[in-house]
Each structure stands twice: as C-alpha cells, then as structure tokens.
Image 1 (spheres, rainbow over the protein chains, first blue to last red):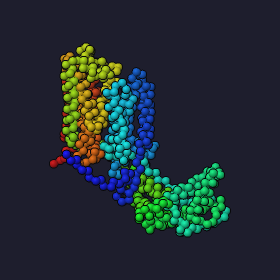
Image 2: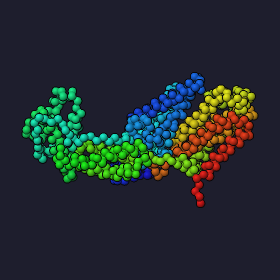
Image 3: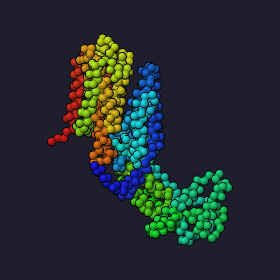
Image 4: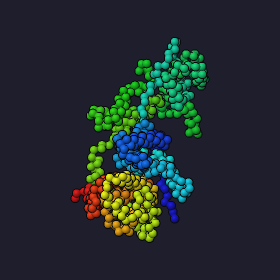
Length: 308
Length: 332
C-alpha cells in the first residue's frame, strides 16, 4: 500500500501575521496560555461572586433551605456562567471582564468581524473543555482506576490541544474559527534624538567621522536608545556612584571602539551619548535607505560569510 | 531643536505625529461607542487616517531605526485595523434571522445527525425497558437515587400514581426537584454537544445511558399498569426535552464526524465549517429546553387530565417539527 504523499508545504506566514487589504502586514501578538488562564480565573471569580450574591438574596427571602444550598449554589453558578461568557463577549466584541482586565481579545481567524455564532460556540465548548474536566479532577477517585485512567487521559488531552497549534487555540476556538491576541497598546514615547537631557554648563559640539560610525548596528543603537530614555525618568536616588561608574564605562567603551580622540568629562557624558546616538542613527538609516541593513555589530562577519 | 537639525526619521515622525494622535483618539472612540456611534466625518477620517497610518508603518519599517516609533506604529495600525475591519457586528435582526431562516435550514441540512441522535436515545431506552423486565434490579443500576426521587421497584403503585397526578402543586421539594431535573437535562444537552467533538464516543455513551434510565423508568410504570399515565406525565414536557437532547447530540456528532472524516480539508477547517450548523442546532436545543422548563413548571401541575397532557405534549412536538420542516424555505 502506498501512503498518499504529502504536498510540500508552501512557506506559511508567521502565525501572528495578518495581511490587510492595504498590503502592509500587521502583527497581532498571540496570547499565551498563561495570560488566558489568568483571565479565565478572573471570570470564574466574578461568576462565583455573582452566584454567592444571588444565593444570599435567595436565603434572605427564605426561598431555600440550608440542606439544599449546595445543590442550588452549583445550579446558580451554572445558570450564571453559561450566559455570562456568551453575552459579555458579544457585548464587548470578544472580551469578557477577565479578558479586558488582562488586555486580551478574541479575533476571527480571517481578521474580520466576530460572528455571533462563533462567540456562542467557543463559550459553549468551554463547558466541555474547562468546567467538566475541572469538576472531574475534583471528584476523581484513585480507587477506581477503570474510570479514573481514561478520564485523566482525556483531561490531559484536552489541556494539551492549545499547545499543539501555533495560535494557541483550544477546541472551542478551532470550531469557532477564532483565536486570542494581546490587544495592541499604542504608546508613543518621545523621540530620543531630540530629548532634552540635562545640559552641561559648557556646551560642546561633538562630531563624528563616517568611519567612526561603521562599528555598530541597529541592535546596539536601540539598546543605547533605551539607556537614554531611562535618563528622562531617572529618579534622584539614581545618582549614586555605581550609576556614574556604569555610565563612565559605557562612554569609555564606545570611545575606545570608535577611536574617539578627545576625553569626555563627567558632565559631558550624557551629551556625548546623545550626540553619538543621533549621528549613529542618521548614519545607519542612510545606509538602510541604500539597501544595507545592519542588524547588529557583527554585520561585517555576516557579509563575508555570505559572499565566501 | 530646529526641525532642520533633525535626522530624517525624526522629521518624518514630526510631520505625521498629529495625524497619528488623532487616529488614536478616533480608535478609542470607535471602540467605546461602536463604529455606528461615530459621526460621518469621524468615520470618514477613521478610515482615511488608518490607511495613512499603514503607509507610515510601511515607510517607517524601511527608514526608521527608532524603536519607540516602530512599536507605536505597529500597535496603532493593528488596533486601527481591528476597529476598521473587525468592528462589532450589528445585532439587530440576528434573532429574527435565526428564527426564520438560520435555525430551520441548519436543522434540515443536518437531519442525518439528528436522526442518529434519536436512534442512540431510542436504542438506549429500548435496552433499558427490556432489561427492566428481565430483572427489576437493573433499575437501581441505571437510576441514581437523587434522580428517581423515591420512585423505584420498592414503592407502591399508589405512591407512583400520586406523584403522576399531583394533588398539591405547592408540595415541598417538588419545585426544587423540577428545577434540578431541568438543570440536569440542560447540562446533559451541553455535555453531549461539547463531548461530540471527542470523536463522538462520549456523546453517544452519555445519550445511550440516558436512554437506559428513561427506558427503565418507563418500564417500572408500565409494569404497574400505569403505562398511559406515565406517558402523559412525560409527554407534556418530555417530547420537547428529549428532542432537545437528541438535537444537541446530533450537533455534537456533527463535530465528531468533522474530526473523524475531514475529507479534503484540514481538520481545523472542517471543524470550523461543521461548527456553523452545530452551533445553530445547539441554540435550538437550548430554546427547546427553556420551552420544556416552562411546560414542566406550569403545564404539568396545572393540567391533571391524561388526554390533555398527551395532546399538549405531542401538539407542541408537532409545532417544533413544523418549524423545522417548513420555515425558511426559499420561494419558488
């Protein structure tokens, strides 16, 4: 018997990439199992609290007797949670309260609007995928291996489904055609190149020659960017000796690497770093415009490897 | 610093920053109030600013090495994309469409699975019925005490009759038992639906077991000569309730079949396609369960006459069938 040969797979786009009609690929970061678990636990807490509140109201109105409290509480929890997930995701376009708190969101696999039926089915499946295994785990009995073993295998199998696909989809997501992403948070920080750092008393212009700027790549540039950005939010207590030493070390390293002749005095260090950042960025961006991307300081070695 | 002193990518940012901020505000508003809550001008600006932002992103990826700017633009375009292309669906008319078209059409498309669901329940009931007449002790094997509410081979015929024709509707515990039964069946419906995807096996097992319980329960009453009475007692809501469970089972089986026999599609694709009809079936089942609860809560206690009970039960069943068969057909 011949096995049907698999077609060689075409180069699949990354799982978090989406190509809108504009043709510029955008990236929606896939939410991992941990953050989704946190959102789920938050939702469970919310529904449990709601059912306890209902139970107290019922108790105050004398509608239940203490013997039946267990059964009624279980039923209330069930009656509240099933519509809670469906309705909240419909109302907030794919976010329950827990998901809002964790800043994650359900999106459709094709990047279009979420259909109502998709939200209904992914939350109905939650019963079979999360609540039933969770209840089973609580009631499993080691003395009955004939029932316990298959149940355990089934529970583990269900839990593993999200780990075996790239978009971390559980069964309900697969049926609904949805997956969960981190909701992108646009925060525009100031441009480091025109940041106003503390000015030294003596203003001095630093100038760099082009061969001095041929040592570093984008990675080092962006690390320097983060360092400079941290200066704006620097607390007064960060002016200690270790801090000054670190800064001195960085300046000294750069100076040695690029063969910068002049000495840098202590109050000029930040100014020097910023001037170097600006010159380096302008230089690298220009190289990039000419088609030469330098991802890090090893760009020379990479080049020679490719050509040889 | 003068703008002439700026490096090129910083100038690029300075020229466009106001537009990006504006888009950010618009996206926030669109998310809070929905795209339909925007004014005409705002909606127009949202889409054109979004397109500008995608262009900015494409350019920035080429010319800029400013990490903060790149991260911001990536997040902004992605967020704007979601509010332009994946806004909240309009909910108006969803219910009407579901009732008049979606549900009955889905029911007709998946009739084979529903028949399979009924078969599983029917076979279970038949086995339970026959097994009871073989040996009444089977009754205790199938029905846990919490479900039978004291009715078993040991109870007297008189007691069984009293339960069926309940003289005192406000009897303690009766209401709680009914609600318990309801949530029991709702849970079973959700489980047979959700478990179907695990290669059909758990769904079939669960519904077969429920058939066994049902069969044994009926057999107990038939044995005492209460056959017609229990038929009436069960019919008034059971026709609707058991059909709902079979339909939920049919939906689950449909998902299981999609996993087992995906055909030319991948399993994920085939699940997604099967999910559309299966969800509608599950919702129909939920609707029927609510109706069954109303029938059980009011009908069973208010209507004590055997024939009326039978009429109501099967009449409602016929109405469901008419809905499934007749509604949503295209006019020729």
